Each structure stands twice: as structure tokens, then as C-alpha cells.
Length: 542
Image 1: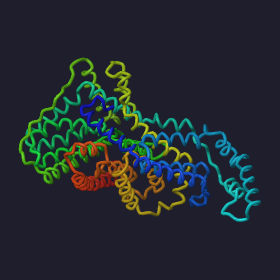
Image 2: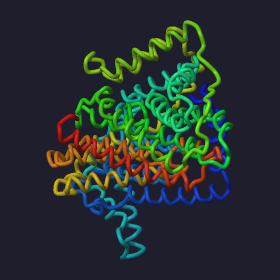
Image 3: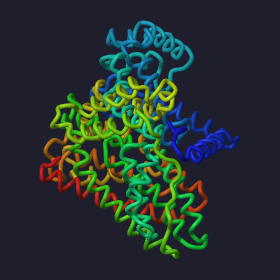
Image 4: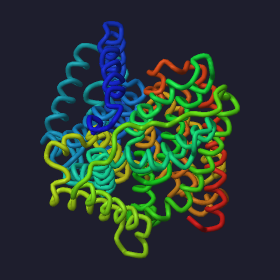
């Protein structure tokens, strides 16, 4: 979806560099080693004795899910392949080995509540061979077959439900957001909005910095933070020409874009994938069923984002002060005139209003997300070529995470794990601190979407098992929404987020500058965000 955005050249260069780095000989050798390790770990977990896990009543299907979960975790953390490719693999593995449309040999195991005659025969043959060849060994073939035969198999997962994760209502929410962004860029509405919104900030350097921070944050609530960062960095190009190269103003302006893009995405459920993932588990009718709406999310996240952005502005202008006091802003390009532009403006306003007031209208945010898709399709604002610009990699990434969560819950693995580990005896504050630290740390090194996809289903099950004990910290929402905040607060390294990478690629900032401001802003964002969630949760407002 990036080709129609201003700043596409930056994105193209960023993706080209990542592609080239991925296929360097040294990288390939490293990936092959990682792949071998992941394969060994996955197979070991798949075939290990059930009592090794310490989970009472562990079934064969649940053990396979554990192996697939470990596979996904290692693939995402080590980045052997792109995150979305790992998600596709998750869905494929679940379908092939745990569903009611799996290979017959795996289905027969489950339906007969035993390993099946073929495996038992193999085990018996192995046992005979082992007995003839030796009398020792850790576990003979016959013993292995008997051990596995004694293990309950569990219920096969529904292949329809696994496939349905790609059509989850949250996915529709993302598609609606992408369609709005594509239409805005196609008609020039984004550039026009940037020009109009930046004008009130005048020409004082510090106020121009504030303008770029706030406008970038606002755009990131409705447009991909990657596309937003590329667009706003392009708008900065004429500004840089006016600033002396020896001053720190260029650093402040460049760093303001990724910081604002990362924090701004927290403001709406469609701003960044971790938000939507949190919303799914909070609103799952079969789970927490909190019925948290789009407007409710914005009601407490928007003030948080504004405060965090203003604090970021204050820090940037103090740490990287301007030597030139005035800057003229000149944004090229403008809004196209005509019927399509009017349709986009009206539809954008109506969609946002329906999102904000979803509880009053009765239309949930997922349904509203399809309105721009319908309107733009019927009026010709978007065509089939535009559909190819949708960021399908993000959608596959999220769908794979949902499939993993579905497997954890429907296989009964989450419930069994909760019963085996006494989470209800853990202090609520410990769960809060550990989850936040783990999410923040992982998100600095891997995709924040992958981090959320790994942590959300586990924490949703843990929170469900702890019941009223979480009231002391504001409830389940503090944990799950806190994960979304922690994921977006991770911005220490160029690899932490695409906006960071884009800003770093300008060669106007050094990694130490990004790490310095990233640590400070991230820490403040975590404290501010978790503090807000705690107060709202205890007050019963979420």
C-alpha cells in the first residue's frame, strides 16, 4: 500500500536494503544454522514424553500445539523468515497436523483415542528389533508406543475455525483502515491535511517541531505508522535545507517522526496491530467479553497519546536545541479536485464519527470498517489495482497470531497450563511487571505484532484464571492494553520499528541518539500508560 504515498522512495530503499541484507552469504549461513536448531527443538517437543511438561492431562493435540508455538516463537525471535511468512506456516502446520482436515494418519490417532494401528505396529517392530539388538536404551520402540498410546489425544481443531482467523472481524478492521489510507493518499487528502494542520504552528522552530510531532501522531492513528513516517520525512526535506548542518535541529526533527509515529499508533484500535490484537482478546465472547468499543479505546488512549507526544516534544527541544529560531514550511503537492475527493472526505468523516460513537449507534467498529470499502468500491475511488496495495503482510501476520491463540484455547492447552501453574497465587503486580518487561524487551528486537501475537493469548488465559485477584491493579484490561502500550513504547534501535529504520536511513541521526531518546521516551510512556490504566481500571472506567 506504500507506492501511492509520498516518501515511497524511502520505503523502497528501506525494503531493498533489508532484502539485500537477508541474502548475504553470512546471513544465509546464520539462518541455516537457526533453521536447523528450530527444527530440532520443534521435533523434540513434538515427540518428547508427555510427563516432561508437568502439565496434567496433556493431550497429543496439545503437545503438537506446544511444539508449533515454540516453532513460531523461535522463528519470530530469530527472524529466519519474515514475520508474515512464519504466520502462514503456523496456519499451515495447524491445518496439517492438528485439525479435522489433517493427514488421515493424524486424524485416526485422534478419533480412535490412540496412536493408531500403524504407529503401534511400528512401535512393536521397533521393540522387537531393540530387544534382538540390545537390552538397554532410554525408551524402546514398544515402550514409546505404549507410552504414547496411554496419552490422551484430545479433540481435533476445526479446520474452518483455523481458516476463519484470516476473516476475523479484527482483520476487517485493518482492511477498512488500509482502504481509508489508500483513498486519502490517492486523492492527495493526506498532503492537504498535513499542510492545513501544520499552518497554525507558525514558523518558530520549536513550534514547527511540535507541529510535526502532533500531526505525525494524528496520522498514525489511522494510517500505517510506516507510511506516515515516510510521508512526514518527505515533508521535512525542504525544512532541512533551511537548517544549518552543524546544528542539532535536524536531529530533533528527524527523531520526532518515528517517536510520534510509534506513540500515535496507540491512539486507535487500527493504529497498530498490537492494539487490534488486544481488542480481540478483550472482546472475545468466548473469553473475557469486555465489549470495549472503538470510541471507548480512543476516550482514554487519545489523552495519553497527546500527553506523551507533548513530553516527547519537550525532551527533544531540550536535548537537541535549535540554533535557527525560524523555519518556513513548504509542502508540495495538493488535494485533487473532483467527485472522488468529495466522496473520500465525506466517507472519512462519517467513518471516524461512527467509530467514535459506536456504542450510541449500535454499529461495532468492525462493521463500520467495511463502510469505506463499500462506498469507495461502488463510486470508483478504488479499483482492483488499489486492492493490491493493501498491506497483506500485516494481515497475514495478525491472522497467524490469531490461529495460534485459537489453537491454545480450543485444544484446552491454555486451561491445562493454568491449572498446572498456580497463577492464582502469584501477586497481580508481578504478572503486570513481568509481562510489560518481556513485551518491551522483545519488541525492541522483533516485530511488535509478533510480540503481541505471542503474549496476548497466553496472558488472556492467565488473566481469566486469576479472576478477581487482578482488581488490585485495575483488572485484565491493565495487563492486555498494557502490552499494546509496551509494544509501541519500544523504539530504542533502528530495527525496533520501521519508522525508526526509515529515520535512521536518512543518515541524519546516529544510533546512540536514537537509543538515548528512545530509552527516555519509552520509559516515560510505560510509566504514564500503565499508571493511566491502573487508575482507570480501579475506578471501573474500563
